[in-house]
Image 1 (cartoon, rainbow, N blue to C red):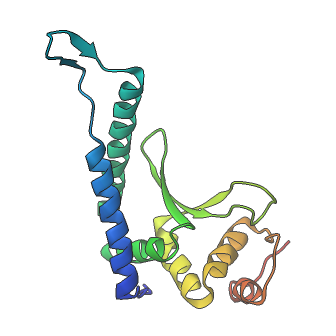
Image 2 (spheres, one colour):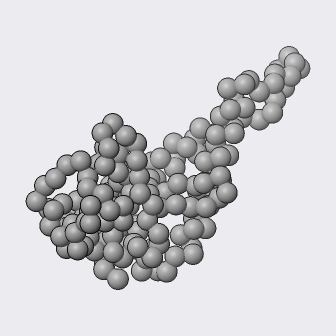
Image 3 (spheres, rainbow, N blue to C red):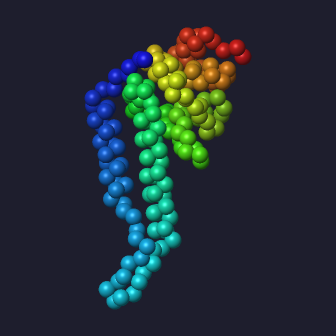
Length: 173
């Protein structure tokens, strides 16, 4: 398994971002069903407050599912995925499906088709390969991996991308 090294300053900045996000989320609060005002009247929760509670609960449920998923990964795979997610925050993400399956996604927006939201699923067994390609070629290595998996040329080309595709044995299209 290839190991990615994340600079300490990057780790600290990202950790701080995460902590601040957590603090902000925690500070938003959950609205109670109703409150009794000083004059004795009962004020029910508003529709907006009901929606906020549902959104906060759904977010917490996702975090719990993501944490459970990470616990299933081999330590080296977990570390490699975390490092990749830290280094390519916009490119690698997680998605929770309706049946509570966690998918690792590589963002391929506008990569294979113009003006298209697109991503490629990364199986946990593929993390090592994706990390190795990222270390060699940067994000173009991830694009080359997706191109090979799809057997499809991206809509753009550059030297690093072409080198990565060649490294992977080329495409048959």
